[in-house]
Amino acid sequence: AELPDNMSIVFQGDSITDAGRNKGDYYANHIWGMGNGYVNQCAAELLGRHTDKGLLIYNRGISGHKVFQLADRWTEDCLMLRPNLLSLLIGVNDFWHTLTHGYKGTVEVFGKDIRFLLDRTMTAKKDTKLMLAEPFVLKGGTAIEEADWFPAFEAYQTTIKKVAEE
Image 1 (cartoon, helix red, strand yellow):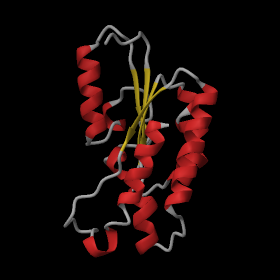
Image 2 (tube, rainbow, N blue to C red; image 1 turned 90 degrees about the horizontal axis):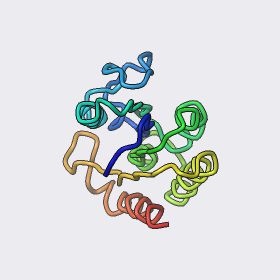
Image 3 (tube, helix red, strand yellow; image 1 turned 60 degrees about the horizontal axis):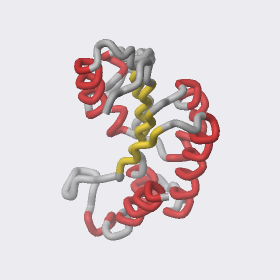
Image 4 (cartoon, rainbow, N blue to C red; image 1 turned 30 degrees about the vertical axis):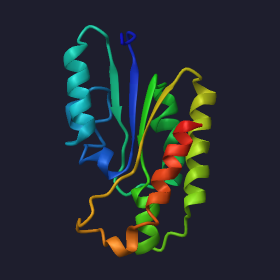
């Protein structure tokens, strides 16, 4: 598909999106502001293939964030960037921090908060395309004890799927 000129693409989420980005390098297309993960790879591919399109790509992921923290910064870190495409990968901390950080959120709160952010986005800019990614973990990772995570974490994944269908 053909990309429009001057398309604004905003990546939002937690540490998987952040990937060690330099938060002081917040301008569009700045390599140090993209982090060392999937956003950097996506930006490099898009900018390399579409040099004549004037794409504006932003990484606004912040490690450790949960959905309510995105809401606190949504105007500045999303709406003001006028995204034509919003990519959102969030949910790991919304569950994990209930196990380790005393966070009292639930999967219902998670779903309500996601819907609220997306409603705000679509109200501000009706033609925004949404790309919702399912939160994931690597079983056996250092922070993951399967007995604590599964099957409860799967409800967060299912919630994102339901929101995407809506």
